[in-house]
Length: 181
Image 1 (tube, rainbow, N blue to C red):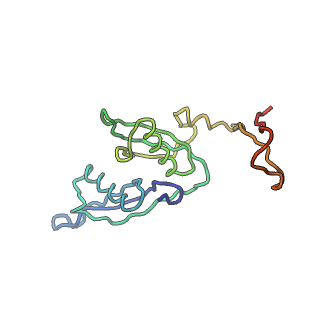
Image 2: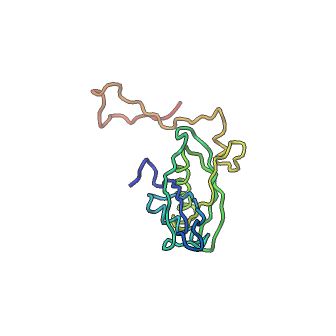
Image 3: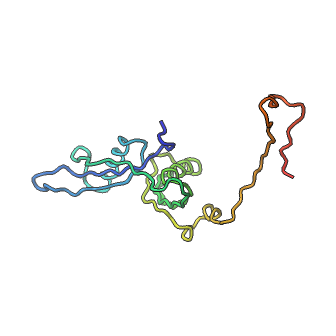
């Protein structure tokens, strides 16, 4: 089920190793992960923590799980995403740029593009870092083309509609003219 329009949500997961006699105050680790819900976010946290530090779920504890929301979800921003992914030949690093109103939307675009262009599924993608990129620092031509202040989007298909409901019919005697002259 897609909640709030996005499949993936950003979660902040905080956890640590269980306290022992040798180490009564273990180091606390905080990680931002994208997942469908908080249960999968915790699972992803343990997956990464097991790789980075010697902490397993069996001898660790979750202190907090919080969903992170966008500060300004109505303004369009440029997002840079650093990714590590596993392909059929090996592991690769990649930098991608997307324009979206929220970081969750940009991450959803990333997963869609990686699946379509590189045939990389969701479990094989690891998001290393994300950042809001100013227009002057954008590298990709696909995002730079939208930085024009006088940008225009032409109407390619214009259909003249009936001005009253009683004039609206399912079938017309003549074909509608949609050409823009």
